[in-house]
Image (cartoon, rainbow, N blue to C red; front, side):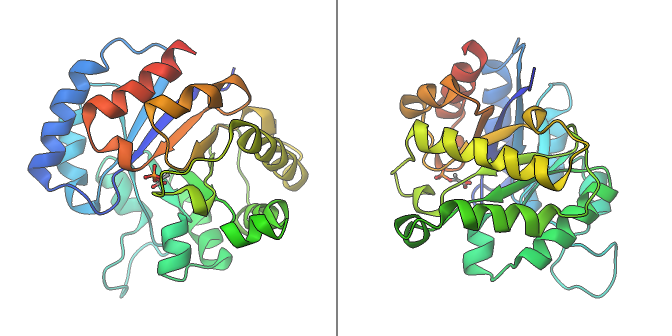
Length: 251
Ligand code: PEP
């Protein structure tokens, strides 16, 4: 069975003490989870503190980005080994905010995925179309390009990778995709994955939905082949985030 996964993307939120307070509350709430893996992706400045806070729990640590080089003159960047050293197991790559605001291309994303895998990190590869692309019926084509651009000719197994389908128009807008749209896109993504890597069982790669997920809209997403969620805004409070985790746990 593909494991259930709920990932918190805190983006550029929380000081170290705020991050520690969240962990204290969330660890108490989430004790005894049996089938849901939870990953918290704080800003770089809070990674070490969150790693220490999570040490006695099963909650995993992730970063929000990574550079593809191992070391060198790359001011402001963080390498895969530095993330491992900070206690990370996961890393978000290709988030639409980085693609759109910071101009990340599929070529850069591919290099990051390759470097992360090489360091033993699990990339959470984000893909998704803009509103205009959906309205022009290009959503499937765009997502296929993003998957192929990031993963073609890269070695990975079912355990190495997570895909997050995040329609850009649904991120931080309060407008979530329908469960049917997400489920159809999930099937398309699995076909793309299977086509570019015939050795993996694409059905076993965790496939998440992201885009204005909240406890009151997420239950229906778990009816189909979606394995969990990448959560932005609703992951900032321990209670609201735990409500989403609990839905996954009881699905
Ligand atoms: C995200 O940051 O990946 C995200 C989906 O944000 P939100 O849940 O706030 O839409």
